[in-house]
Image 1 (cartoon, helix red, strand yellow):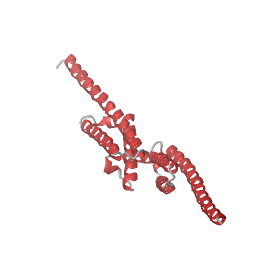
Image 2 (cartoon, one colour; image 1 turned 90 degrees about the vertical axis):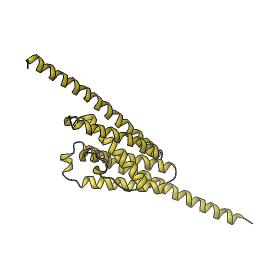
Image 3 (cartoon, one colour; image 1 turned 90 degrees about the horizontal axis):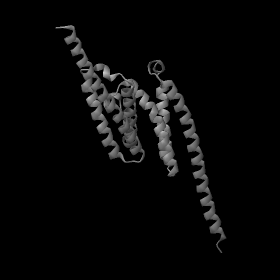
Image 4 (cartoon, one colour; image 1 turned 180 degrees about the vertical axis):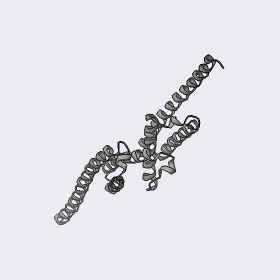
Length: 213
């Protein structure tokens, strides 16, 4: 085999590889968009639509795994990690809201590090759900969201070595702590307001009752 023929084959392989890489990047961007949309639908309680989007995202990750059998390094890129994290966040949020339970990285076939980072981001989505609930006057659901936020934060903080092994987790945990403190204040304020409103209504009824001849 001449050098020209040898290099020609290498060039063909590189071109094929680049094409595969572009397809993977395209799929991962779509998976990220689908997961973001699923999170929005979950907040809107359009659960079946959220599940449908996440099913499509699951299929895209399935394609990624098939490609990785030939090109294992395709699994290691920023877009892939970002897509996994967004997907883990969406799947975790939907499962918490609908089934009141956590899912494992094995359940959704997501790498552990991406699962942990996605889980940390769920705290922000739970705050959003808590605020939506407060606007509806549903303090009970808001309090439940706060408890979940606290549970996730406490368990993440208990992973002492994770701060060294999971890049970005410390920053996410700092943000989470602030969100929890702010949410607790919002719920406390609304609970007091609701309590005061109920007391005023009771007092108003008593005053009207006494005012009758």
